Image (cartoon, rainbow, N blue to C red):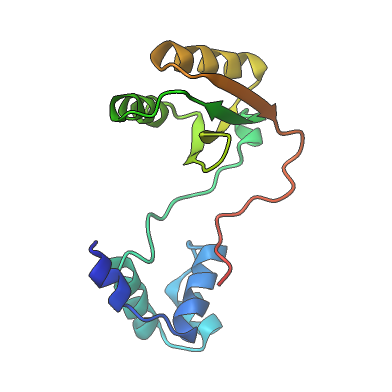
Length: 159
């Protein structure tokens, strides 16, 4: 998707209502969404199609309950590195992308270079992840913070 295409799409109040309805539950029928936003099925479908084509609506997926599936430990991993060359970064990104335990990875400004959200079954599983990661890429310092309680988690944008 080109930047020009993204910028050419205008989002109005009805589009925002549609997006909010989809963020709440994308499995709902078009009829239900249309009723909620005060429109009919075909115009809503056309708006959704245009927003998909423009890249506003991305991949649609299902949110799973991590704890119900045995992934009871969530670690936030702070990584400092003394290496910033392109080869190291490519190797690091490849290592992260190959690990399904990494739910999120962000490159940061400031003292910490990267932060990862890692979901595993327990501390032993985290150690297996950690040992595998440091065997592939050199890092200067790693700090793992165990989340004791998830207070809020959402992928919804504040429309």
